[in-house]
Image (cartoon, one colour):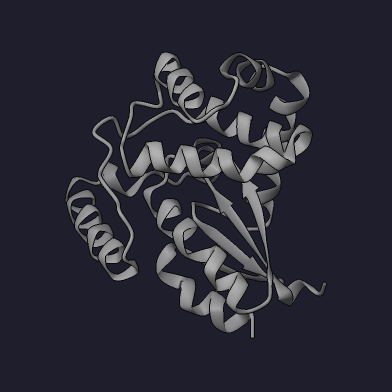
Length: 198
């Protein structure tokens, strides 16, 4: 499949705008008969490498951003609730995502669904290992097995490599999408992604 028939989606569960993009990109890809390629990265690592930071750290921008995301959620017709524990360290969550892609790809998308739901629909403190374990168990995962996956040296290295590769391609935040060499940043650029997939 040619590069313009796929969309790469760089995301982190801790990014509320990544959640909004996640709710729409599978539909866009299906509509365009394109492949959605999931690219988990550590947003904190991206920020550190690029000197960027979360918009909510600018107080007035943060107020505007949450209001704007509520508007987008209504437009998309999807549930979204501000996580009272935001900003959450997602290192373990993203390691598990990468580990599942590497070792158990059949479980990856279900894990993505569970994590985005627990972060932005029925918001939980996913910075708390006990809460993560309970969330995973409730969804039918083996929390101990996934914790071991997150601690695996190859998985840790893979997440670092994926994050470094993203920065080298120009990624400075999430969500970021690529169609071929064209980069689109932000869930409010999804119409451009749709156009690029024609």
